[in-house]
Length: 159
Figure 1 (tube, rainbow, N blue to C red):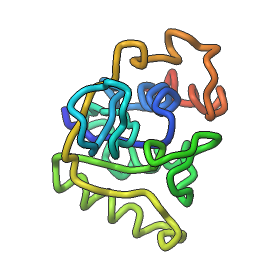
Figure 2: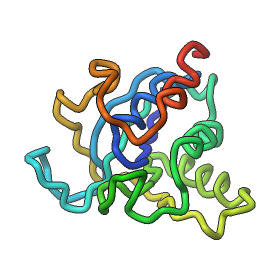
Figure 3: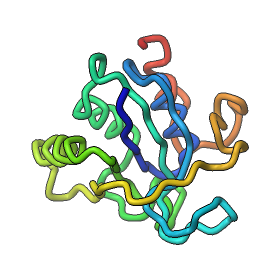
Figure 4: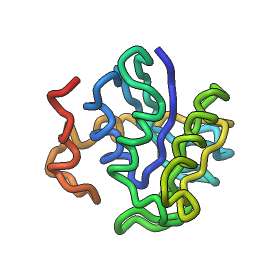
């Protein structure tokens, strides 16, 4: 198994979407690349993200990025849907430098690559979100989400 972290606005919808992708084995709601050491209500530079454990024999990093781009506005800066602020920025993070190279190459190959605002950076800090945020839309399917319901479950039975 390998791990990569995706920030795509409010993590509830991102986690619900990613957890159903082929090759994704586990997801966890969290925060990436901030400075606070706990989830005490402050974001201190963090991006809401989803830790994604995947089987590289079943899905590649470029494939995961293609899926990810289905649910984000890659041109928006510090905003996804109605959610505005630095914590809602888009990003791809990893401890594996090869993942970052693959992510940058996948973005560079897109015809719109010059407009893309998704940051691709090494993971410098990660904090797991509190239990109430884990699998939030699985446990509370009627909860508000900026992503359309049909998109959230587009791949639900394909893994």
